[in-house]
Amino acid sequence: MEKMEIKRWWWLLLMVIVIWFGTLEYRKLIKPDEGRYAEIPREMVASGDWVTPRLNGLKYFEKPPLQYWATAATYTLLGEHHWTSRLWPALTGFAGLLLVWFAGVRLFGREAGQYAALILGSSLLYAVIGHINTLDMGVTFFLTLGIVGLLLGQQAEADTRTRRNWLYCAWIALGLAVLSKGLIGLVLPAAALIIYSILQRDLTPWKRLNLVTGLLLFLLVTTPWFILVMKANPEFFERFFIYEHYTRFSTKDLGRYQPWYYFIPILLAGMLPWTILMFYTLLRTWKGTAYIGAAFNPERFLLIWAVFIYVFFSVSGSKLPSYLLPMFPALALLMGKRLAEIHERTLLWQLAPVLLVPVATLGFAPFTDLLAETPLKIEMYRNYAIWAAVAALIYLFGLISAMVLLARRKKSLAVLIVALSTLIGAQIILSGHNTVARWRSAYHIAESIRPYVKPDIPLYSVGTYDQTLPFYLKRTFTLVDYQNEMAFGIMQEPQRWIPDTASFAKTWDKQPAALAIMPVQLYPQLKQQGLAMKIIFEDTQYIVVSKP
Image (cartoon, rainbow, N blue to C red; front, side, top):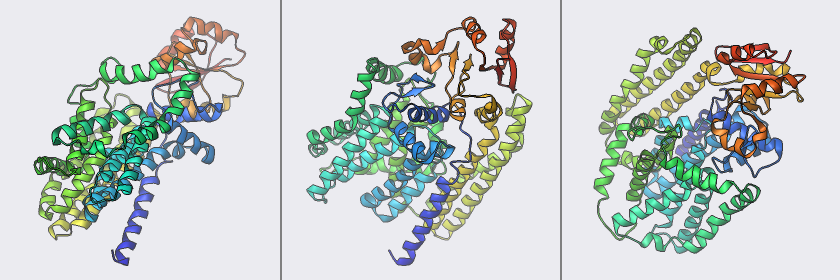
């Protein structure tokens, strides 16, 4: 590339960095995920125990510890803030963009790699999840690194040492994927490769995997923590490997069951503004790679990977929108290649229907009151509608500008404009969520009751548990008449729990000073039982009381 072009790309990279990381501190944590995954690392730092994950002081074995460790390390170095709690998903999300760019260049050419990174970074679901504290972005990055290592390790034109190093990288990445979110880090890539080998009638990839050395690397990454945590917690094996994997996948009664078609609208909306390009790419890739050849076919494997991820989670008994995220980098690589090949007019017609999205958003924004049931929600939704309208205007301007550029055959600039306007719009939508923070976050509760919270005063959470409150108060709560996802931890350490309000009343009476949070509707019942309580905070959801 010429020096001027290289300089432009560095400025673009700097701009994306500012947009990507610039709003991490602005938003309050939202429940449940952001509160949960901010609190577990905080408790690791506070307790000094980095082996046994705990939530609200109770053993919590739903997921492995890699993100907890990364966030806890960030807390130790940089302090406990909104942005440090979100830094790991933001970093791995941004690293995923660089990885897709690199892989696209190596596999399909420079232009395809650039387009792939722009498509991925501006896909709505990827842009949003990259700024929310969940575990899905971390596992997506390491799964993507694993399959990229596999693809580059299968290139016939590379020398033996290069292929071997990429495959070792893949094995290490899959180990880190397992430490990010469990056995899917190994099961999903293995299943995709098996399907590829069957469809292509090609066992050559397996011969190049360096299975013995690779598995040793994989075990070296994964087994130390599993050994330590099982030694400290004999109950871990059954809970983590049986319940959290097999039972969650096969059972419909865990609160995350959705019908088989659940992911259809998630995929359609999550891939905006590139949804039509995605279908075009899937169709062309399937037709264009439907031959059986001797050479490894990266397009065919990426297609199988993306489709398998979708089918796997569609048949699962547990579904959440972010489960689709690992298919997005593969789709972006395929779409980047197709986008480099298609004519400007084809892309113009693919983007034209997307104009309906910002237009519909602008049309509906004045009527958000229809979604509200209370005066507080009416106010919050009205404020949020302003943010949504601004995002829609930027999105609309970007799409129209891109279509004008496409008509003038300036495809690269058009794609860049669409990508940046979508990413900026997503950041505005996320930042606007602060307007509903009083409904989704306990930040305002923590600020109101903080003067009453002393180190020696016990805290109780009666009939409820707000995932964000312990993080903001830097304290855990004794749960009363509430279990939910902490039922397993309570079973292991029942002394940390009070089973009913009658037992709580006896404990409360014995305390010289104490605080308790409860749902608004529970307060009259406890008052009727004769508990001495003084209200120190009240809103439409919760009441916080102190011992008078």
